[in-house]
Length: 252
Image (cartoon, rainbow, N blue to C red):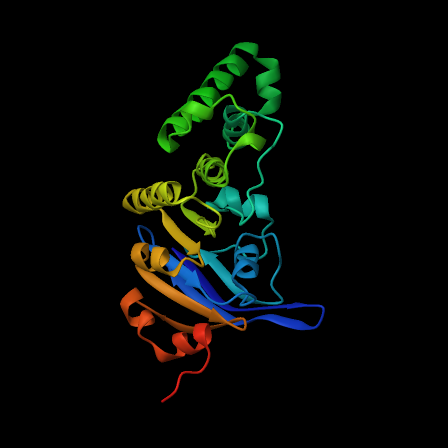
């Protein structure tokens, strides 16, 4: 479903991504791990159109997307979350989801203005979708709270819900477990597993090695902007190069 080929990116003379290539399929979770500064979040920014690569090619279901804007890529079916959630802090949790559902609507603004009845029907549909997402993510108890009052884990759930309301076929999830209490981490893991069962193509950056190894079908290890190792979690876990990258050179 998603193919990334020979992606390079420089920032101020630094070669941040050095020929990264990977593939990800529908109904599978692809984990991306690596030390701090390995280029993981930059890779997500390039894939989702927030940053343009200097060189390389990205295709979604065979269609090139590397020259599209971020909003065009989202419409094409690839959406990302951010390591630091970007909620509307002064809006309620429900209204945050309503904004996402409204933004994903294909209803013409002009048509809605010309047909008030159509606008009312669209508003009801948006609210129903937002309320269904509240139910799915178990955020009903905080539906009318300001988003700024949420815990770190609840903000991650809200970020996930906003992304899902765009109805992506490919979802990039950046460090979903960072700063999250164990109970909510387990809930996030359940949601990722459920999305895999629904056929979504998931790519997940994560520093919690045990969590990402446990949920992923395939792991890519980035070091210094390049793919060091890729394979099944059990293969990657036992690869000496991965141990060296995380722990320093081990004695022979």
